[in-house]
Length: 75
Image 1 (spheres, rainbow, N blue to C red):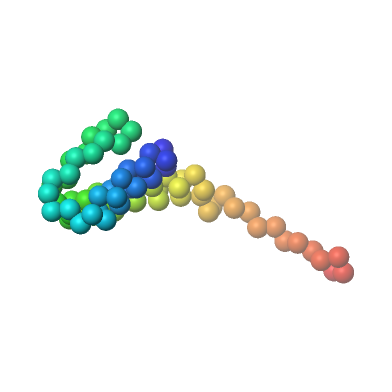
Image 2 (spheres, one colour):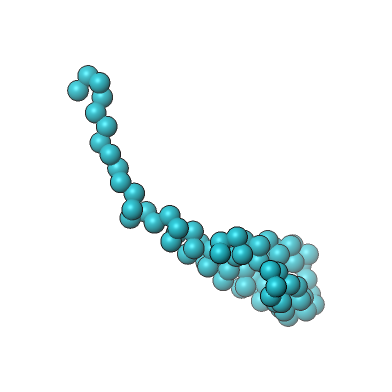
């Protein structure tokens, strides 16, 4: 799932970098996306970044990390 979001973000970044002033339609992983302005592209990128961040956080929850106390050899 995170790979899907990253692929979409990469496609959005490529379009944003051109500074479009026209409607843009592209397909990523079998889905077609159409945006009518640079503002829509930027908003879509923020949306998919949040989705990616959520997937990444769910895959690596900080609450499941255990810290072990390590004793030195002299202690």
